[in-house]
Image 1 (tube, rainbow, N blue to C red):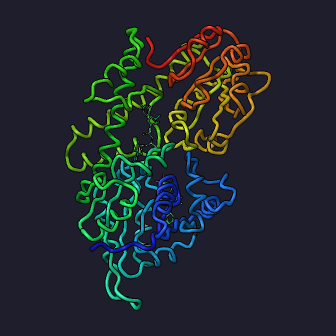
Image 2 (cartoon, rainbow, N blue to C red):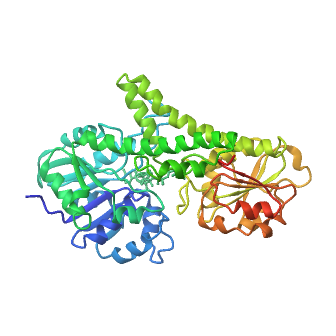
Image 3 (cartoon, rainbow, N blue to C red):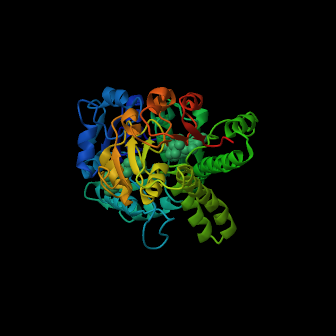
Length: 471
Ligand code: UDX
Ligand code: ADP
């Protein structure tokens, strides 16, 4: 007999916690779901009655939240109260790569996970199932279990006990809602059958039984890192071949189609581009690398590390292409950058290739005009480490790299020597090249790092065109 869950608390109202809990609340109207966060502004945005202000942009999310909010989906800053009421607590806090100390640059920073585990230990009542949702290094469940274990036992309000499960999220940003509503699989790792079945019974409300996989807790944690590392490896593989295509006259899209037709390889995740970004891929591979080193598997560590180095190489390769083709200098030149998010249909910029590529161009003294339909100016300023600034009048060749936001692609390209497309937003596939080309300073270039633009149209409009992977 599994325990029937009536009340869920999710700690962390971010990209993972928000959409995941919205879909659980939608599919399980009998369960009260409360998403809590320390960040009051974020909670206020989730509670925004106009829905326009949700802190996470995700197609379809506003409809799901609109159906459930106030019914059985609640957003709150009262963390302890929500934990105390819950039969099940999801941990969806941020786990970025450590920037200092032991394992800096590779290991995940677990301070937020540990803090929330301690908070659960203190505030929980009765039996509570704690579910790791954030991507975590393997064996984190043991740490959480130890912290919770210290709080177990008799209390004035009855016996306190915990079970810990690993339930990694596999949602991709931009398709989070469909990934959650129709997942390829749901993975539940744990030791206690009753806890596993309690969580499985939630997913069974909408996920076919055969797609709910049960494993031990270490396999579950490691599967998440491995899945993301394999996906990232495919991108580095195709990007490496893109460079070879450019050198040999092959076309990477034709190569991808040809190899993707092999059912053993499959067609997905074979798009060459400016390199992978997002909060997961690099972090998860680096975690894997750290883990391998820890266990003395240095060759295995080096193997996976090369996936990340190839990715950085690809990003620098693109900025270098721009500089080389613009006669070896971009100082004082205006370059339109179309797209800043790490992929289309998200406002997330974590690890976006745009950061490194723009930083390279700013270092070379370029004047960037950036257009992205979803990323805010404040976010770009944080990512680029300098505020937006108008290009210096008069002495444009002074050499200082500056950037500003453009309200439209047209505004971005006005007076520019080049357009650089970094994100595959749908609207960039239908740009009117004859209309844009006349606004630019000739000779002008289109650098299409996603190979999504109408290259034929751009060439016909008189632009020189570079497309990733086209020889
Ligand atoms: C990823 C995983 O897909 C998801 O399962 C996991 O839980 C979280 O990490 P996400 O980072 O949201 O999801 O995006 P994803 O669609 O995987 O793309 C990651 C990066 O790879 C993006 O920068 C994207 O542009 C790039 N990419 C993807 C390519 O360059 N080529 C491709 O063919 C696919
Ligand atoms: P992810 O992509 O993993 O969802 P985010 O950074 O978008 O990551 O969201 C994580 C959220 O977790 C943040 O909004 C942060 O404020 C919140 N958070 C971190 N630690 C705690 C904590 N101890 N209690 C409540 N919320 C927390």
